[in-house]
Amino acid sequence: MIVVGMKVKVLLLFLLGFAGQPNRVIAQETRATNVPTKASVRNPVDSGPAVYGRFDGRFPCAEIAKDWKVTVGPECTKVKWSLTLFQDPKTGQPTTYKLRGTLDRSAAREGKWALVHGTKTDPEAVVYQLDSDKPEVSVYLLKGDDHVLFVLDQERNFRVGDSYLSYTLNRIVN
Image 1 (cartoon, rainbow, N blue to C red):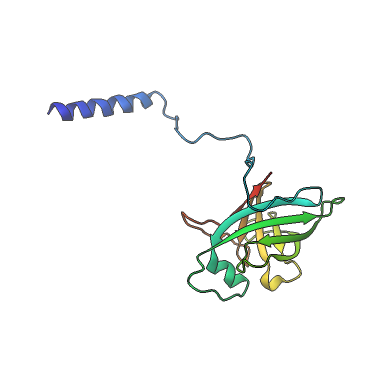
Image 2 (image 1 turned 45 degrees about the vertical axis):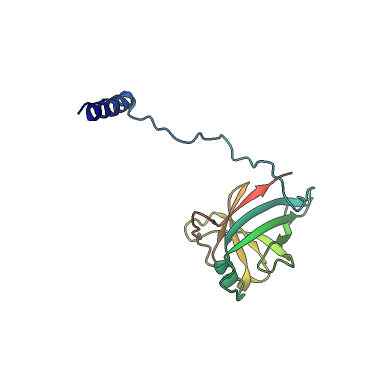
């Protein structure tokens, strides 16, 4: 009986500590800006005025293979991407991209990219379209902010990852 009484007292003291602060929430500290951390990476990060940025991420293999119309086996569980977007150094307009770690790890995928706008839920959203000259196999990336891109499906809807893999690409800096 004494042990139960002591547990109740501790619980009451804990709860009373928050009673005077009804709006107090204990949560992860927020940061004013989303700034990428410096990373140690296997492939050097391109730099200079012709580079818009490099973004890395991992996601489930099957959905990307389906978009690219590539057949993969059950052993293909994840895809790691290292995406470098290039721009015209004078105008800042999109030019080309280089994607390492695609479904075929022996070769990088290269092509053109473009800025397009709109998703089904946000017509003003900034979307990057890889292979803008090949809409049947384009990859759509929603700009979350300057440092985060979300991989969308062919209809420009969000993809849902899991606790292990997500459909996000994060900026990498030297």
